[in-house]
Length: 141
Image (cartoon, rainbow, N blue to C red; front, side):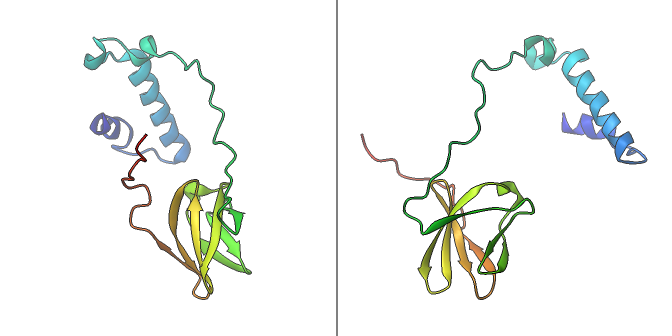
């Protein structure tokens, strides 16, 4: 699918962003509504698609009872602490993060139940944890 997408929309690319978007839109329409898929018994995705009966309600309101406070990530992916700006990630823009001072000027930063890393306020850096979403041992029931 990715090879076909590239061939049909980017070789050659559109002359500007609007032309490029038109190529992508045309591809999506053909891919979902006209082109049969072998994996779907030669039907189109549009023939089989049904919206979910469960409405998406977004993330639950996140609380951080074991942290000193929370902070909101800006639209550009930063948090502001002690008049210093620290880059976190635009992926978390608008989200509430928990922060907890673990040493003088060193803060643990968490999203939901995941510890993301440590902020060093003096150097304005975020030292990430290698894989905050890695395997966790579930408590035995």
